[in-house]
Image 1 (cartoon, rainbow, N blue to C red):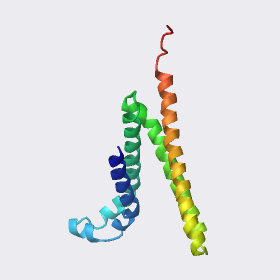
Image 2: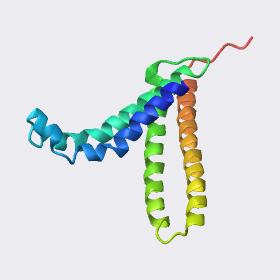
Image 3: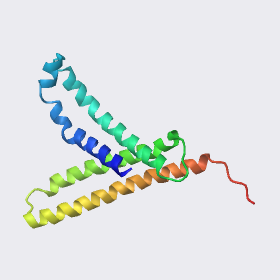
Image 4: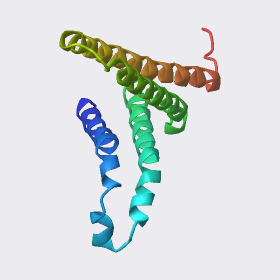
Amino acid sequence: MSIATIAVASLVAALVVVGPLLGIGENPDSLLGASGFLNALWVWVRWPVVFALIVAWAATIYHLIPRRQNPWRQELPGAALATCWWLAVSTGFRFYIDLASNGVNAIFGFLGGALSLLLWLYLLSMGLLAGALLNAINTARHRAPEPVT
């Protein structure tokens, strides 16, 4: 699971960081003869692909890690919640870093960057746990009560 997580994180990071650069150039269009169509398509498709990859990764984590496995359908609400949480936290941190990085000295910037990274990772883990809690509540609601012996 760790290797799969690293692979998915690398792919998502590449889509987020390098993705905007792919829509700027004209080389892919000129090679395929699409004349601007691929650039416009990439702008609209990039974020749904990132969202789908993160949802699939979170649903896989929720499905494979626990001892008792549920159907994949029951893992999707928690995975969608965790993904929305992650995107909201990451967007908020991007705005915070943009605001906080203006006029910062070197020592404060280094320490603030490390603390910001730790807080960001903490909030991401809270999102993963919130999705797992939502899945547990849905599973308990749909599961028949066990007979008392």
